[in-house]
Image: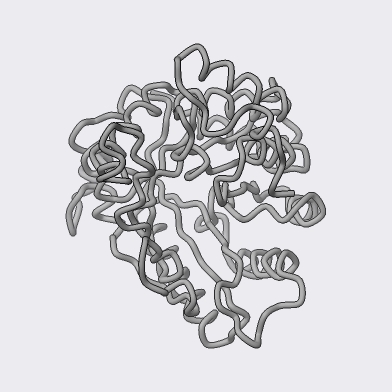
Length: 336
């Protein structure tokens, strides 16, 4: 089955002005989010059990994949083993399975602990072989049974020792990935605990570190695209303009109002982004399939942000689902 991701990457790299847009559902939260990662339980037992189970989390992965509107389903390697290798969910789907290839310490969140307050350290729970075939060592034939795409994240803190360690870990990963024909996309976070080394302008700092990081990487080891926070039009345009061979994508961030989510996607595409990975913005919505349908419409240029909010509420009404906020409150922008 042809994958829409491959087709879109080819078209975007050939002509960055095309309307193609890569949309991913990021359901890899269990790699760092702990018990709350599957999202809010909306069932009758919510008072006793506030969060969904991991099995419910995986069912949404199946449902969104079968809907066929996203280009990538991003999962933990354990979820991918079940859905990609054992169930063969993606064999007859246009959706590409992907795994979180590393879990730096700053994503160790959950409902307790304080790792995010300490400078990020590089770490990988999984291996490329486990992503590709579910075990420590794969035969050449077995490498085709699992995922061949992973998200690699790095967090710079403007600290020479820490950042060098992060870059070395990324270099080691890239070399192994090239040897094993494993593709990746690169996520760059804001400094999570820079202390006295906090950069004067975070957006410029992130842009500069990306340019520096990729300058030493040949095409064989380069990421398919980037996943970065959305800092606004100026910073995004600067990065997009710098190198047309780099596809820039945004991450979703906090849930906010529905208008917040839709406006971010609409605006990012306007200023040059060609990919978006939404995790909490999909997972915490009242109806995930309706949410993905609307996001796809915005990504494809069929809806503006405000109209999309109204359409989403209309879909909820037809399904008999009570929205978390009245329409007038959900139209408010809180993340501008």
